[in-house]
Amino acid sequence: MQNLLSTIFFEPGLQKQRYRCAIALYLLILALGSVPGARSDIGAYAPGIVLHFSAYAGLTLLLFGGSNGNRWQRSIKSVATIAAMGAVDELLQSLLPYRHGAVSDWLIDCSAALLSALLLWALWPTLQPQR
Image (cartoon, rainbow, N blue to C red; front, side):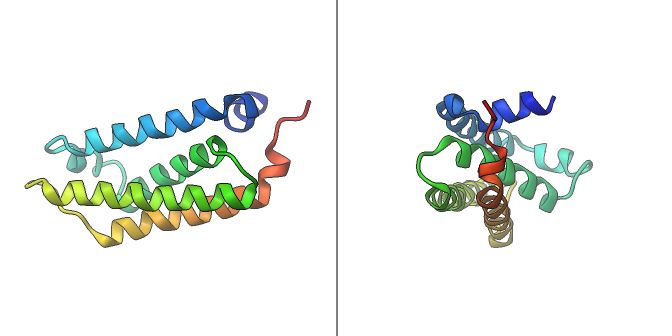
């Protein structure tokens, strides 16, 4: 199982697929978040902070592994992209009459990205699949 996860998340040959998967999952987050009542339904299982943190930490992993450059460049790109994604998500929510955008949610998104990118930056060489 560890070898499978290592291949999926860290194999250089799957770089473009990870990036595309991050974009697709983000669009799914936007679409599902726009469904009336969906947020309150899922809120029964997990609080907003857990949902935001886990979703954007996962997106950071995919973006980090899907981008080019050294560890530093990947970290900067991932965090900047997540900051933009989180801002668009909150802006879209503020436009819906049954939702509201919150700066606190955006800060959680950015915190998840920063922490995830920091961990990936530190661990990236050891996470690469061994040939």
